[in-house]
Length: 503
Image 1 (cartoon, rainbow, N blue to C red):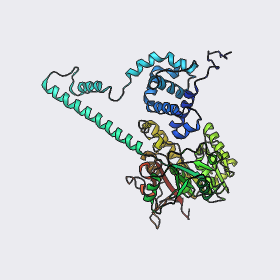
Image 2: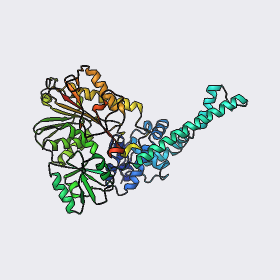
Image 3: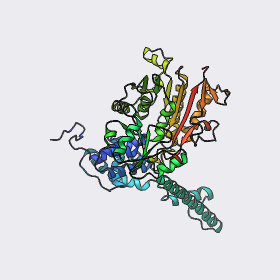
């Protein structure tokens, strides 16, 4: 017997699991999650089907937003979840062209099918609306309503049309080149040893016992890149910079591996390990991770501190906070205190006894929400999203506030690391420059480092890391940038601030 509420919603008929799973993953990927990891962790038996649905939904995200806006779908159907609607529309128009099941969301989309079809035809796809653009341009530039019939107008029209065609071909060519370039990027599988449970050598010994061949780490970085680019199916090595990081072939999956399931190893990209590695909090110190979820960097900080001292991990979103708590519990981190709070409310100057600990914070990790434009899994599918100016502007505003807050509200902070998984200068070098300009107290020290409000912007991994921030910005040389093509990691940006001795 079905359970029908007053508004007619049938609770007993569930949405097919593939649609529900794909919608949850698509939303998390859009917010910065790893597509591959989320798909595999979902446990769905049809991994390829889920993957395809998510990719298509994000590829057509702009069109889907337009469809839902013009059809007033979400306005009229307030209980329909946005990303579930996108997945269902994707399947109906860009996937199998049909929807299965009798659930309320499925039937709702089917009821809107004709209207959505009409609207879809009106949406401007790149090359399909070329003629209308040409006609409009002719009308605007030459005051010609129809196609020209005079010789001079015809010549002008031909020139304009050819210019437009060439511009579209060039844009399409560049997009194809970029897509091919991104498709050629194959990252190895990075595995961080949870040193709270085992040493790297102990884990290496276990893998060798299971039949894996360990490749010694070359002394030269370029040779190291060659090695990890050509790892055999049964070979692995250690990272060049981070001793607790192992490197495996990209095809290897660890989700069924006992070491992964018991928390002895964590699947974490090298670029994501760099912020905690560069923050280097000492055992028995006090550290703060200001945007901690999902918790990979938090657990890394805890391991670096050997479970001694305290790591405060703040996360404002309740759902992400729960993910953070679960990961910390499973990773054996006993020195982490989680806080379900907006990091901007953490303040040593606050007249609040619960904030007393802020005065003692020595190390701060600032890894705020960003566009995620550097994540290799998302580089192709987000090509049209990562330059969404409105979204980028909002993200940059938050990033600026958070970094400035970290540098000014914790009087005993010794080191502050700012990082993003973005390749956009707006979220990286420009944030650093804007914050330094805001602090507006710069004097070079004896070694040429810039001093801002008793903080030095220092050059991390000097002589051992090649790629730096953009030289278009005065302080780009002090920042680290990991490049997917050359470093075989996600794209990542890091800036390290250290307080001066007399601070």
